Length: 310
Ligand code: AKB
Image 1 (cartoon, rainbow, N blue to C red):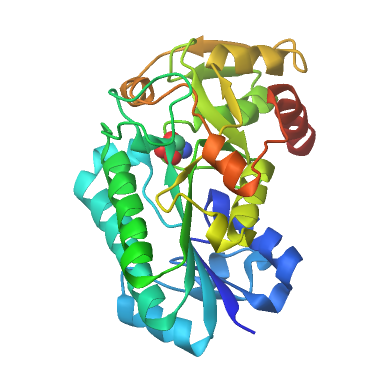
Image 2: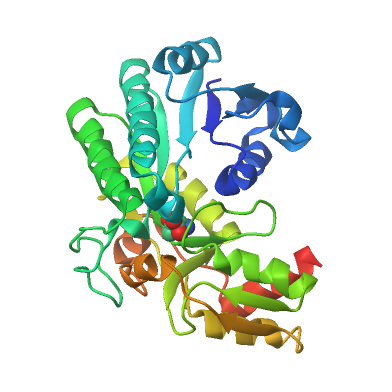
């Protein structure tokens, strides 16, 4: 049986995706990979191999040795960190993907690669932004996601590579923390609310952004990968809608569980990034093509997050 390789397994999505894939396909069918040393990796991520995805020879050798049939390539520098190191973000985000697409082409490997709502920019519609809207992002991360989506479509159309992608919104989870994103506040706020009963938010109180609870994101990923290829009409990245809320709305929902919780606001450079993104997206294509539906609304997500983090 061909194995599944998850590259970037130690990150926010990878940590939970590896468990979900193991639950579905069995422990031995899933190989986790990242740049961390084995000793620094939690037991749940084993079997594990140290891998630098920028080294194509190493990547191909591993894929052939382990008989890899599907790669989930999750490595990326996110929007906020990317603005501090634009060229490093471009190199990591693009070269890693191209290496994966190249081995997918030569060795007939299926690929999942995460795109993002960051493909949109100031010229995109703000509310219920359509699947095929203007994509002129204002961040390096967004530029790398637009280019990456087009490369995915190119490898699919020209070489028949079965590559699939989702434009994730901000992801909220209780296991691994995100790192370097603009939407990270929506995870950090829970930790600070429980620990210190206060949180200083780097976005304005009324900044609405698209978000999703991790169980929905993992389920969406597995459902997309299970969908029959001939049902898929989008080979760039699918828009997915789950939640759209402001920091103020999230804080109020947390206050309904922790009445003493207080939020203050001190917007920084991330406000400009958030302002360039839509407040919600239209996911009609994902619903029609492979039956996408969210399960968690704001109320259910907050209750579940707090119950796990307590
Ligand atoms: C970020 O904030 O950079 C990410 C994203 C929306 O892709 N969470």
